[in-house]
Length: 414
Ligand SMILES: Cc1ncc(COP(=O)(O)O)c(C=O)c1O
Image (cartoon, rainbow, N blue to C red; front, side, top):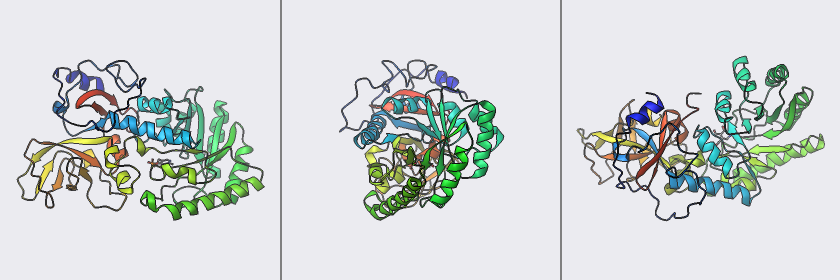
């Protein structure tokens, strides 16, 4: 069903309820010009959405719901951190895939956006005029899509090979379009990135020889640092030393990078400890998830997105079954220490989703006094929120127990 059809289909819901206490009681400050409160204005409102919005109890499950107060708080916290440490915030939109939320990040001071795919760049160019594709753009189709993004959007691409430079240089020349380049260096993640400053400098020289490409700087991703935030000292010190050595070699080669881009959610609030970083790219922080709070990069009450699900069976002793299986939660392991399973219940954190089939999530009840009835609704905190968003067409924004708005996952599947 299309989004507008889904929304129209829900327009017969007229009663609102505040039975669900999603409101985080200790958070009372609301920025006056904040645009997520859709009953008054504004940017979060889906233009095709008719009023009244669906009520929470009648949302068909499984479905992702976002606590808007928590979302605001997460956005503000990261924006404030960036300001406090004079770091440029360039959030990764892979987590939400929504231009509307990207606009909220920009409105709070983000200097630009980060994307992983050329199709995400295409979608986000509706709101972002400065976009980094933190991923090598390889292949004619991807490059064509990228080059066709409105010329009002300044493009930067990360890469780590001469082949990537060759391809993007040819595409940029064909379209007569300047593209800024960040050369990716591997500082411990061992995913992409050249292993030494020397190799990176070679690539920078190639970039500089190929206008309309422009050498803008270097990038790395500290995704290997997943220890609890308080236990990251050693890894951050190593990272800082490695980056310092790279920067010294760049200095010697008279190729000082204008941009040094790094950052992730687990390390976000310690970015200022990594000497030389000028901008950071956290993504998950906007919603947070079980992994994020197990790492200690947020509190459990900072988790904004949960999957609303219904108990559909209690027939087998010691367990209950919900309608959220792998197609709703993703089969993502917890990427931190703290227990197994594929998610945990928000209201009963001792209960995990211990196993799944596509439409069934099996809740482990041994270890909990809670005994649900068929028809009860629960909220699951997923292990990895980015995957959950990607599995859905629509996300619902909830405040004070009321579905205030719904938005499409516009870059979904792209
Ligand atoms: C290159 C890059 N930068 C930034 C991020 C954002 O990191 P996080 O999801 O921890 O916020 C990611 C996430 O996968 C990434 O791949």
